[in-house]
Length: 254
Image (cartoon, rainbow, N blue to C red; front, side, top):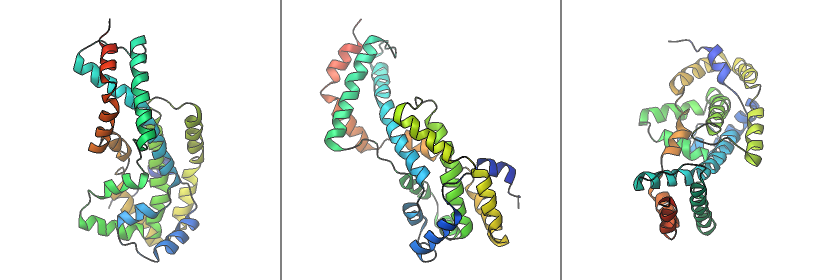
């Protein structure tokens, strides 16, 4: 069996909570092995992942007007340059329509980290779910949740959210993003200490679970970004109906 390369792993592993808290919480919340992995993702506190998902929702809303205008430009085969006066005018109308829709019917984007994790788990077969239910109920599995899923994976998500196709964070969101990144500093040291404190059999169990899950969740956030369900599409179309003619007139103007 391949040895866990702690040099590589520890560089990517970070943490938000102490292992003592995590283990005591798991015993209190579950009273033993959880019923299923979906329950774990729904009930385990993962503050970094949850905040990263909130930032993702805000980033998705910010980029939506540009995606809409890009689609309208391709459909009408017109020249519409981002930053041009007519682009900015059309974008302002689209943005206001989306803002009005949210005021009337709630957020367009309301993903949660537990939802994204459950979506990943939904692709697993019965044997995989049984294995991971047992793994996440163990001290080594909880270390994975707190120091990898809510640490290294979350850090990768945060970096993605501040890179194309998203715009870089500004204002309040920039401050929140920077605070999250700062909180992840020192994760390598914390992880190694916690790993070494585990009994030998738990360290081996961590190695096995880590190998199976390595990078499984890394792309989960961006996969969520690329998937727009029918309800979301219907809401956006409805929001733009009253403004479509005006937007097209701006786009087709000289």
